[in-house]
Image 1: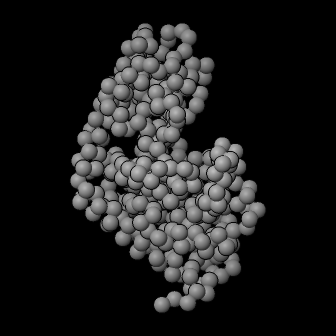
Image 2: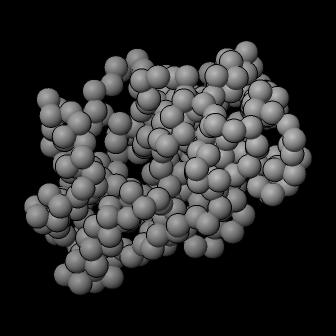
Image 3: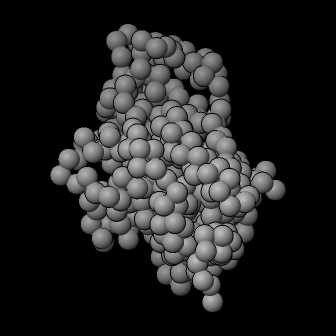
Length: 328
């Protein structure tokens, strides 16, 4: 099977938006591809993050991905920093990336503007680390959103440059732009994306929220004028709730509208909250089992890191030989 590579940064707690928009698709891809999934903690330190928080987030994310259904026997799951070949290849690829190419990355410009006090070299170079992540495993496909298209193009450029200079070494990856994946918005600002690092947590439903918290957030969710439960561009609040309910139940938008025809916003909010809380209850139970068993968790991480390192080292050895490094 062809290889798919994808990574999630543990810079915040996972949300239902992360699950519906990305993780659900990651699960589906394991049926048809050789999937490699990473907790991208190396990427996380381009911003200020407390060490204890980063460790906690990384362990939580690793455990949650398994609890959500990513079976380590059916995909390769590991923590990025536990496979040093990522950093090694990133340095080499830095030397095959032009300064102007890296400077044009729009995310670097955006993030620099948001945090001008911390415009570090890692923030500038992290698209090259991203390229190394993908190219290490000879990934044919990378599931991405539009905001990552530019970074994938840079990875393709680097791979083609290296292949042309030496000989075919890397698979030149292509993007998968998932057709399925609900775009979940904030519950308090339905015009904005539900983010895992938003300052106001009331707009975000985290995968580890307890039922009382979930219900409270949905009860307070912003709706629109009128009373009809219909999906419409001019009703972003109720449309967002319909999207969430549809995604968790598997019902179409039309079926949801018909189910709640004649209903009111308050009862619909409760129904959405109950549906989400019910789904997350089983996920949280499995998460707690994995997360509390330190020996089992360490075993899974060790197994993933060793398998990833074995595959990554083969690519790195080939690169180092072609570059001209003396190898033992």
